[in-house]
Length: 255
Image (tube, rainbow, N blue to C red):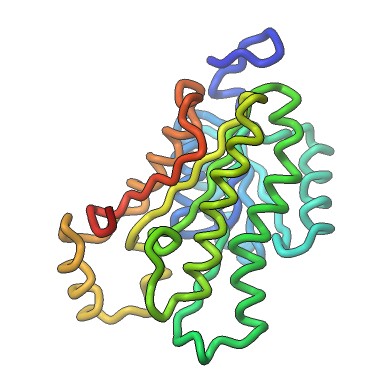
């Protein structure tokens, strides 16, 4: 339990909003929170059917689930998303900024439109969602903002300059906002995974995956469940002294 404005709120009474939760790590994060009976808000952009399937999985775990669509690059759509949730009496205690897009290729080949898309989804979306949902957390003097970053935001990656820059921005955003919100009982952390077994790896051949695994001291890619468990831990009331941290589960790949 955690004390909110003089009363106790149980885990089962809390609500988590996970952006980009229709697949991959986002879906596993939603399911992890659902497994403890937390109320789940599944955000998606266009993948309506996939989001509904994740919602079904979460409901089978005993959670109350609400799905909502919004383009996180646009302030108006995020405002409408928040208004729809509030119309249903839904006020997230925990925000997981997971939605993201990647761009592979030499920087010389990146267009301005591609730069804008990666920056808008990965970084601007984190800013807009945090700005929209943190006032409620501040008002109740409890909240968790957890940003899903990347190991490349720490070390940078050749042929992923734009993605690395966006995730590096997420890391800096995390550290700065953590200092701003700490007096209000709201923590802000980032989880920066290494290579994870999701459909974002679908562009790699079996040989490329094998070579990648050889570079990782743990000898394998991460399972999505390993990332979702860390996100869940950071959301717990007893994790309240952990803030402003960039935690990278990467099998020893980058230290």
